Every structure is written in structure tokens, then in C-alpha cells.
Image (cartoon, rainbow, N blue to C red):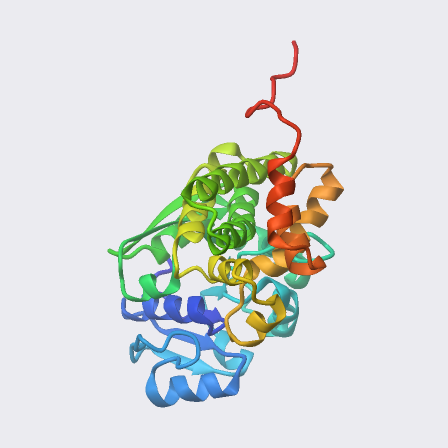
Amino acid sequence: MINGSGPIAVIGAGSWGTALAKLFGDQGIEVRLWAYEQEVCDALRRTRTNPVYLAEVALAETVSAHSEFDEALSGATVICFAVPSHVLREVALSCASSLPSDALIVSMTKGIENNTAMLPAQVLAEALGEDVLNRLGVLSGPSFAVEVARELPTAVVIAARDEEAGRTLQETFATPAFRVYLSSDVTGVQLGGAVKNVIAIATGIADGLGLGRNARAALITRGLAEMMRLGEAIGAEPMTLSGLSGLGDLVLTCTSELSRNRTLGFRVGRGELVDRILAGSPMVAEGVRTSTAVVQLADRLGIEVPISRQVHAILHEGKQPHVAVRELMARALKPEQPSPLPD
């Protein structure tokens, strides 16, 4: 068991990385938190708080802040990547030479890389070497950072290809307030955590338009259908996407005001411009970029993703939200579930 046997490094001092550092630090574990922004690193050292991303919580004395990879990663037994998907490759390449060769790697990133349509584990394998796949886990599930930091009850799932690595990470992450389930479906756990952000933008737009709770429920349910179609095409297990990293995270992100993606969608539905919304916040709404990657992946696989496609058109092509709603409702009528193939 790794817990307590060595330092844990967290790469990325956004709200999720900061919450994770608090989670470990409160258990008396030595945590090195790497911050890209020097002002965030300085504030963490000076006040033990992150005024930009998670100002309401204070970190334990066992947490140290770093701006250099060598300092953050030296001797670490577990290394957690908690950076947005669009910078994951760059960050991984930058820290590759500082990475201990025997450390377990955990991806906390919820997204799909644009252009390549790669999931985070695939990006890390390309950046760090294929050998990391046997010591790599991915963590996802319904887990707002502020609630994790406040030690409110949370359940998540860690998936790993190697069972021993997965069990070690499960034990390392588990606390009295942070329950961790184990999975071997690395693909499904990542896909659920990515696609749910796009559907959350869709529900936010619907709420901003005042379309009601029926519309929200329909978007969540049919969004799950899109998630499952994509998952089946790339080898995910259907049960994974009906669990914490799929349905669980989908419900949370689509219904709460704490969701950055739903909030962005709500403001778009109210008539605000996407670029102006993004420029006014340091927080990353992963679904904006992921909508492009989901459409790219769906086109490559020949999969229908009508909700995700309309979200992409609203965010990136200037389509008016009310037009997108009308087109979704006017699609050809069909069975809810596809007919089974004949024997």
C-alpha cells in the first residue's frame, strides 16, 4: 500500500487539484502541489489558500506549493495530473524527464483532446511512454471540488488496466468522506467524464431559454444515449456509463449551479456570447473544447450525436440556441432503443 509511504504530487493547482491536495493533506500525507501560475504558487506558500480557484479552504501544513517539476516530483510515489485536457500533453511532455520511473500515475482530467480525439490516458501514454499504462489509473465521478475540499460525502471510481495498481490507488485515495470504487474499464470511465460536460452545456442552454424540467430530463437521458453509443464504438462497458463516471456525473453536472459547464450553457441560453463568458473567468469549462472532440470522434466512428452536434454548432458556429432546439425536436421519429440484430 502506497498511502503514507512517500509524497504524492498533484500537477495542477486549479480547483480540483487544490481540493485533492487538501484531501490528502488532511490525512497527514506529504503533498507537493505544482502550480502553473507563479502568483497562485506564491499565494499558496504565503496564506495556504488558493485565492484564484478555491479560496474558501485552507491547506494543511503537509502540503507544499511548487512551480518547478523537479521539486514537485522528486521521490513522489503517486503523481496526479489535474490539468485541463487542452494542456495535458504539453504539461506531461514538460515534466516527463522529472517523473520517477516507478511512480503510479493518475489522470483526473475530464476531456478529449481536440484533433486527435484521444482520451487522457492515451495522451499520457504518448507523452510519457507506453510503459505508464501498467501503472496508470483514471479517476472520475460526481465530485465538485468545493464539496470534496469541505469533506462532504463523495463517491468516485478509479479505473486501471493493472489490478494491483488499481487496488493500491483505491486504498490511497479512500478517506472517510471520499469513497472510491474500482473498475478495469479505463475507456468507459474517461469517456463518461468527458461527454457529460457537453451535455451539461446543453441542459444549461435549455434552462437559460426557460424550456422547463421536462426538457432538462430529456437532454440528460438522450445525452446518456449518445454517451453509450460512443462508448460501445470504442470498447467501453455499458455498465460503466450507467455508473458513477457516466450517469452519476451526468446528473450532477447537468442539474447544479456549481457546474461550470451548465453555468456557461445557461448564460449562452440567456443570450451572452461564448467568447465573452470565457474571457471573464479563470475557470475552464471543459465542455466547450470537448464538444469539438466529441463531434470529431463521432464523425470518425459514424455515430449519431445530435445533442453534442448542436452544442458544438451553438458554441463554435454561431447557431442560435432556439434554432438548435427546433431542429432537435424535428428529427425523424424512431424507437427509443435500437432493434436487436437478427440471429
